[in-house]
Image (cartoon, rainbow, N blue to C red):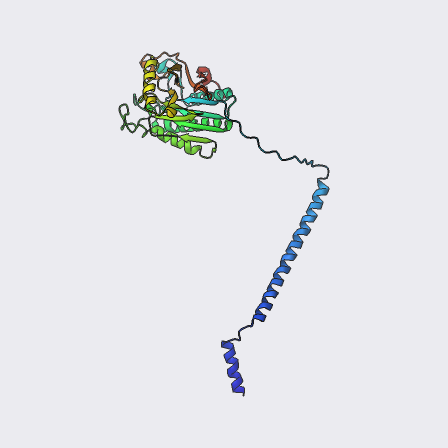
Length: 362
């Protein structure tokens, strides 16, 4: 019998008796009971702590905090825009580093170009009325490059860096004032790649230093949720404004408004605008054409279409003096407004000059 019992014990050690459903259910109930007890104790402890904290806060802050309940008011619907502001930024030629010794005008470098850009931003914001939207037109020649001479301006890498920095600051300040900021970009002739595009660019104009600048500014402003960039590869950029369109181009090809500080041939502009518009469907035609390049501000209207040419931000540089440009030519950038009825309601030049360069508040 002892031998048989030993064999049975050995068997049960290798092959234990399977539990019944009743045993399993009892074990489960015991585990749930223990878990519920622990959860209840934790909840009771939290309730005790919060009740004591509430009593303590009531004693400490009694009579010190005033609460007011206001009835819910749904947000008013946004009224349609009555007016849109525009600022044309063209021909700043950042990095020119002009010297008074060569031009007889003034010294013009990092500080002066930054102050002039700041003045344009300040004047544009001060003029903004009845609108939450601004369209910024980047119409080229953001850097000086080494186009006319190897002595033009500072190193290209520094020109690009200075352009990116200043343009980013300008867009950031505009974004703080306006709910909507659209940035429309076109390439200028001074943006051509040194050693690659030696003459006036006919194709691949977008492949330029300015494309790098525009993309860098766009990336620098990517956290500004109210700013939208439009950087096409065409030699012009078109923006939808109300129910019509406005075209911007630098002015060195595609459409030719003239040459720096020379006569602006309005009749030729009208013919070019008509030719371009007639190639489009009626609803896609442009009611205003904007240009840089000529370094001279003008606003005219012909055949129901507005034309604006922009001044330069910088004073006359060595090249301008060499072709007979007056040292007293007015520098600045164009500001204009649009309404549902008029593509160009009011236009004016935001002026900058030597006093701007000396203004340490900018």
